[in-house]
Amino acid sequence: MGTPRLFWFYLFSLVSTLANLGIGSSAPMDIFILAGQSNMAGRGGVVHGRWEGYVPPQCQPDSRILRFSAGRQWEEAHEPLHADIDTGKACGVGPGMAFANEVVRSRGPEEVVGLVPCAVGGTRISQWGRGSSLYNQMVSRAEESVKSGGTIRAVLWYQGESDTVRRPDAEGYRANMESLVTNLRSDLNIPYLLIIQVALASGEGRYIDVVRKAQQEINLPNVKCVDAKGLPLGPDNLHLTTSSEVQLGLMLAHAFLGS
Figure 1 (cartoon, one colour):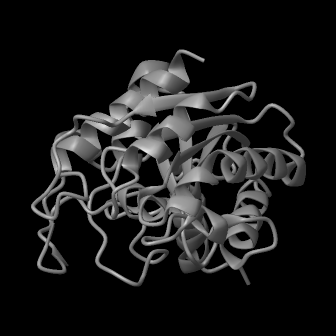
Figure 2 (tube, rainbow, N blue to C red; figure 1 turned 30 degrees about the vertical axis):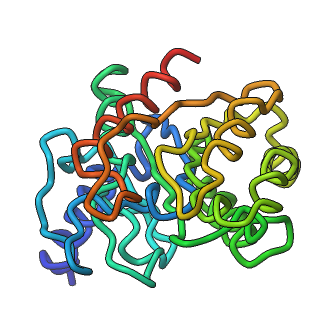
């Protein structure tokens, strides 16, 4: 008795779906870890605790841009990227999709980008120290993301607003960030992993300039700094607007493409 047509139809559909997602294909996948706190997770378009749903042209889905879900499966990426990762508050537009679309646009039709969301709002850098739940989750997701192929190209890091409240946190930022970079490279076994960090545009406290100075003075190889200062903020004077998140994503992409 021959194999039912339904089986072959299902098999063809499955292969086509995987191919469309860039899984199992010969196309290389450049993987990027998105980490930090709320402005990386994305609050663009969030009003009164709800995302308004507007997706800018620069953040539209593309079959060549994948997202590593909370369930640790690759899927086509779409906003909000961190919806199932940063579950404490509503997520909206962040810099990730604008970043990925610009990388794909610049590198051509064969480029496949994989995004690994890890950011959680309201977190201090001390909560990302080696051995912490946030750090362990980031490393674990990063390691698992490459099991089906691909290469981790960079970590995009936007964090520090919560470290502007207490002077000891602000003054200890540089040492904590340098330890994070060193530990992450060691644990992922990527000695010169590119880290692109964002210098703060805002903060929860009065020590914004102390943290910004620490971010800009980090002197480790292959660590770049993109300055968000001056990007328009929302009504809370803390979170970037949707258009600012798009602009930041493009800035991060140009920093990567120029590396």
